[in-house]
Length: 420
Image 1 (cartoon, helix red, strand yellow):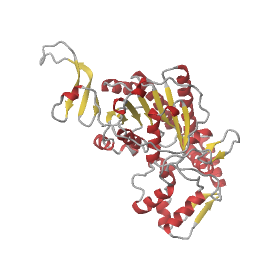
Image 2 (cartoon, rainbow, N blue to C red):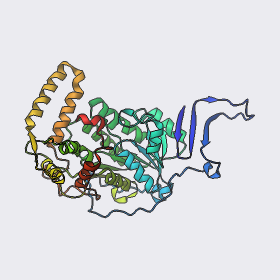
Image 3 (cartoon, rainbow, N blue to C red):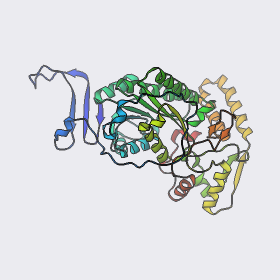
Image 4 (cartoon, one colour):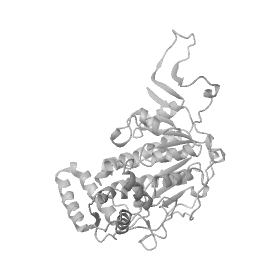
């Protein structure tokens, strides 16, 4: 059997037909019960809309241009003429680092949100169903498994509501080879198939800007799905997409804040100028993703996006941190060649011990982020271009550092990604 929860009721779906003839004279098979958690109201017989629509003031900012996106004028889907409260948005990856902020933002804007979650969600499955329901307050929560298409389709069918838009915030938990293909490609594709089967005509994909230069397995998995999504949209007039490629997240740059505060040196590779990024906060990214649900200028577009302000190198990030602490900078500069040597050793060991393939991949991921900028890769020059990397939002890295110095990294845990 499966369960689907909302804020005022839950639905129990039986795995097999049960005959309740002894209780009722009707010969009709009963397969589903709905239990109200509040006094009976006739409105419960109508489709659930948990969130009242709220007015949302759009953000002004620079014009965001796409990169390598097909110039296809999409036929606007019928859902775009509806009010947010009448638009059903399916969110997969809803309990992830960005996903939970996306759910919150969509609920805030008045959309009818259906969030797919595992029965044990969060980092290493530490959250119970009750904790997940609390975290995703305002959304209809369906517990299912996105890695199993059959389970996912059954959960959505049992939920009994059509889908207008799918928003995928799925991402590999650690960047390992098998996990990357299982989540970044297979589970994401399952979400597209299941969503379309329930009527979805628009797919918003949270990808990553680093897929521009695919040297890692999770990047190749993401690109494969992106390619198939764009091809499918080109062949089906009723399907549109928005592919969001953010730069760096604040949490990925905050790992050294508490160490530096406690007197440890700030570690960087090379001279600290090998790479740069325009990091974006989780709230600002969630807002941008929510924009993609209805914004006509984001239809069938690949959308690189960063936060406000100039691009920052690791050296500049370290200097900012020491300035906030009022301390003299103390840097530890590590030659990038050390990582190259470690990777070559791991690659050799994988030939003898294949089970070490993920360890080798983790080394390559660390090397990639130590040397590659999280900025738009200009196809004309082949170089990263900070000026051509679009900006969005209002939260700055300096504000984030100040908050972490006051409150710590609670809520910003890297989880399994901390190995990177």
